Length: 239
Image 1 (tube, rainbow, N blue to C red):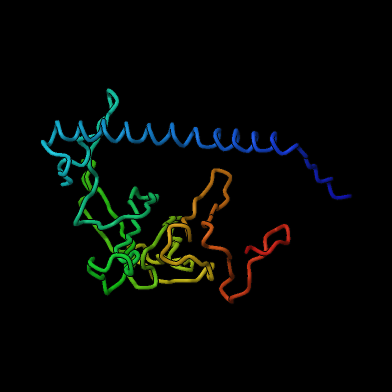
Image 2: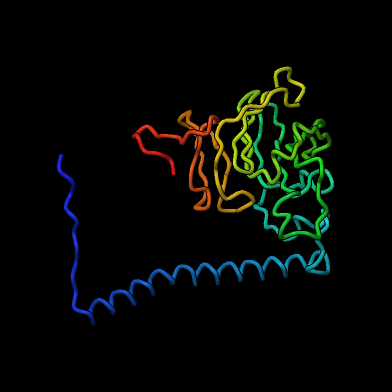
């Protein structure tokens, strides 16, 4: 029942400095290798794109998959592109094979003042391939509003859609099966880091039947709909 002892290692100053330098070098090595690999990968892909389209600046839907390597026996198609969807931040697949898309057009307006403001608010879309050719040909707006501006997550569970946006997590319900939200409830709120990559993130349904959710270091805390702080199963406040 006693607290475990705190183990402390004391070294003479020269040895301590040596160990700090060695540890820092080891920690930096994967970053250097990873960065080099990324740059090499990007250079290879840009060269492949240039060989197909004639330019590395061609970002049209027609050349979107030109720089991707596809294994033998695998077919790759572009499922959807602008203007059907804009600035997608997260997707999930529902039981009808519809692709739910969270859009973030209104992301960080303070840093992207030149981008047009979507006054109606950001959207959750349902994209469908109705004829089985592997390309989306039907779009339905499940929900749109300023309350989900810069949505960072969408998770579909039957007629329930969990949307992570701003400082809150919402439950939307499609009660009549028309792929449009009929009800909205607040699941969690009070998450900091609004309009921040280190804030709110998406929910995921795990193979164990549990829901998994996280937020970044800017999120800091999690509140119930009534504003009270969430307390976990171990009795700890989530903050």
